Length: 146
Image (cartoon, rainbow, N blue to C red; front, top):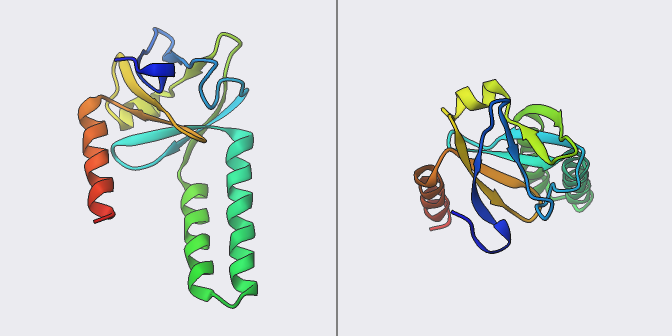
């Protein structure tokens, strides 16, 4: 499965446990990559520098909330920062041929064998074992927002 601009595609995992990420992806030019557990269905791949920028923006939003006296909002941002900070699985380097290593612990956690479904997003890439896991994830999101 490949869509326009490789937004969603299957990536083969080679014998070294690596997938090729297109240069046009959100991490295409990155050197240091962060792998983060989202839930039991998906993990995400971030450019490490961009990930740190996201955390910094959230910290600023938390500080702004407290300066406005909105304790509830500050708690929300602080919980989200904590979740982002403690769900890191690994930090790796992407090689010059745009290969990203999927660590064995991640492959085991998600029962991944020879390929993964890669979904290129705005600031990160979501990775699923297959279409079924992606559909299940989408159903969860729909139910959250009902």
